[in-house]
Length: 337
Image (cartoon, rainbow, N blue to C red; front, side):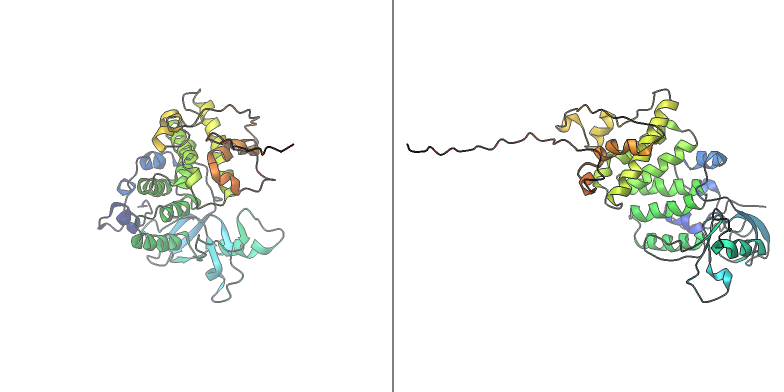
């Protein structure tokens, strides 16, 4: 019998309750969109390359086929044998006992690692480098990185950024249903967590939930100005992709899902609301749905003051002043004739 491959500690931290079962099911993972994401998992575009390998779990001795994802070979790590220097991006646990990280690797996987540095090696499957977390830490398996982040979260349960990073581990590991739960929890802690809104929106777009996808991506636009976790250029790129996605949603929903935030949404967040003294402005944009850079001016508008962090040479839109300009009084001295 195969199982859902879910860490009991994840369920425990999400629910804030002790989990008695060692092999949780998807029904034990909280989240508004989790079940639908799980049911439509085949419709979701994998983030990492799909790379199925037959591994042996050394905890129970049983074999199984797993998506190990990208193989990253750390050539700087000299200690141990070759298998100790291999990282995998896929998220997988033993289908039989639910153990993680205890694997006997097949020769086919070691061969992929050996070809990583060769000119003719398949760079879509393996590469030389280091797959590091946000704090620079190195972890062999995605489950190792997960365990590390879950312990950090236990010490800082209200850190929405840590929850976002955990969601990224699951998303990169091709486990969108677990990523969805982490992103939802991140937003529940902090509704202004821009990256969680954005990525959750993209996942919902994959399963054609246009209404909720559009909502979360628009929220990422409205809270962008106050978000400091990304550099300005990275933030602009993310918002531009979000706007491109919103245009796709608007078109596919036959206009029923708004392309940009509604007045009601703007009032709820206090951003760009006419009730808060913002006047409507007319701007002309030449948008090409297939060219992400054409969305930069609109992305910079939603960045607000953070757009000024972009070098003038790379900036594409000048935000107009929202306060009336004050006229300076100039006193003229009378000349004596």
